[in-house]
Length: 110
Picture 1 (cartoon, rainbow, N blue to C red):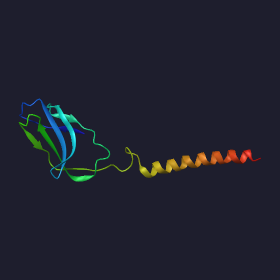
Picture 2: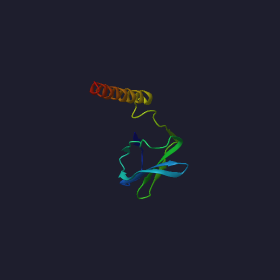
Picture 3: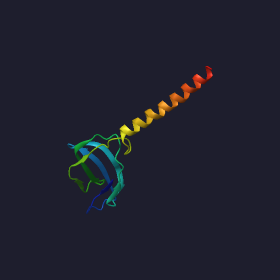
């Protein structure tokens, strides 16, 4: 996710924090160049919620700004895969392995 901002601050660096209800949830970056852009990969363990904001603060405290409120929603499944389909595939692979091993056991018994 691209985080972008505009600033009149001459500060070389900014910190970026994820906030919820005015509490810091995550320090995204304690010091990144004040270029107006930061690439952020949202952690998969981040709680789904609707009351998040970003706080961008010049590290020299000359300026700060909050984003609009936004929602983070966890994806269903694992990395975009359908969880029921993934589980079905694992079960089928396990069943095939079981049947192959069971066939070997039966052939040894002859």
